[in-house]
Image (cartoon, rainbow, N blue to C red; front, side):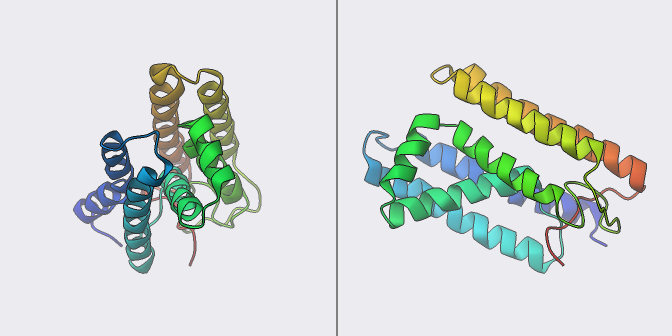
Length: 189
């Protein structure tokens, strides 16, 4: 069992690739495709290092952050291998690209034996209603983000606040129903 203070530190480090990417992206000329390699590559390498360490430590991975990290890695691969269609797509959908990866990750987690955010000792044969509700929330956030492109507040800030907040609320509700010990189901073990 991981100590609560250590759990907080691990959870804090798990999110670090996202602010690194966002800060770095503000410092580049966004109109030059090659300039994006730096933020994508650096943040995806950090995401891989941190996620690998968390898996090694048997610490559960936050599915929202995992989806964002997969977006960062796919963006880096797209730039490294000159997948112009992918880079163009990410440029068109902006923040919704991250939300698409969160949706894909959460949808895939529905079919994982541990579920989307169930206690580690649980073994679900079918998705919980909280998990299905969360996937619906992420889908809604994706649609809002795509529909309001250009309006940073509605297309970027509100959808991510909605996703992170609802994830924590539904995860905590699921944990309270299943166990007194709070943790998110590990991706693999």
